[in-house]
Image 1 (spheres, protein in one colour):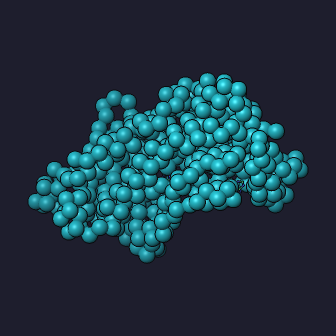
Image 2: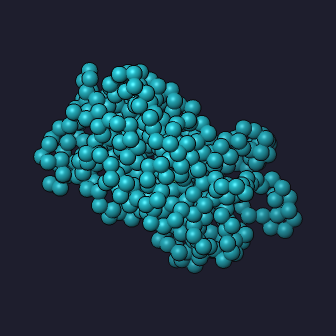
Image 3: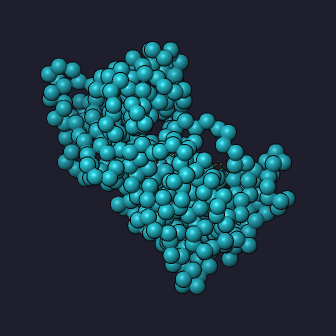
Length: 412
Ligand SMILES: Cc1cc2nc3c(=O)[nH]c(=O)nc-3n(C[C@H](O)[C@H](O)[C@H](O)COP(=O)(O)OP(=O)(O)OC[C@H]3O[C@@H](n4cnc5c(N)ncnc54)[C@H](O)[C@@H]3O)c2cc1C
């Protein structure tokens, strides 16, 4: 029997199993994919400073084949790019945060991150069951039983059809099967928005700046990459996204200029346009007997602030500390107090991020401009209220969660 079985081998699951392998416990990883990097996830992930410290401690950072691009400044603006007199007036309400010291965050390609995580876990004492899908699970008093189904006869589970672990950590994505079986309810928003993700090459250098322009149709976010390249996540109503995915490159580039403005000069397409349907979701309860949820299985937030994976990193860092403390007290990983402590430790940050990201998206893209101004909402409010500090905390990262790994130390 394993102490911990991590289910799901996405960015969260592999990172979670790697982190928990440093607790001295016996860790297994189950994933229905066979571990080969065959998909084309051309998204990038923004990793805050605390997350970077954690991935460095886990040996992942040094294995990134392409150096992460630093973010030293965040520039946020509301509404369509202004012109003439309006430009001068609007400039006063645009917000930005800057650091001259260490970068506040880094941008990493998802495929690069996956490869580095794969190399790192291969060096750790983690038993991997690849090509195996968890088709059923049952929590007993001291252990949970997972039933594994072999996908296409490729499983490396050595023929095993079941696996026992004191604790199961479900990292099986937003539509978590394990959470559903355990009755951990999912509150999902209707899918009305789609993100267009691609790479743009700007005429002028981005100066290590992350840009967010809150348009009424949805936020237009640019994250800096190497040279003058930037990663675009453009949130749009479904129909508009569909239209912009179908137009030719020149028309798309023109649409980007209209949405973002000419601050960086001409924006040339330098990658494929991919569509990601957005369906932020929330679970009030993230634990059940024998089960803990982490990553998107626990909280799939709106990508406007690029924070989904940072929450997952904090999930793993907090759980690693709790497991070490639990073992020190002579308790098994299945003990109820561990689940309670995890749920309590993750509540504040989960709630703050979900509210901040969905709230900002709704505020700027749903409420008509007139109503926003009448109610004193919009950027004047953003500048005055704690949302601004939430945003800068979000950017700096790790402020709401405390754990050894987020400080760059291994647990224990
Ligand atoms: C457009 C977009 C842009 C984003 N940008 C950012 C960003 O800049 N910064 C950031 O921090 N976050 C960002 N995010 C969020 C981030 O991508 C996700 O939080 C992260 O990828 C979630 O990873 P995960 O491993 O939790 O889930 P998934 O990627 O969904 O992985 C789930 C895994 O579980 C496995 N699995 C599922 N069911 C089973 C089963 N029954 N048995 C076995 N295995 C199973 C699957 O094979 C898969 O490997 C973005 C999201 C979107 C949509």
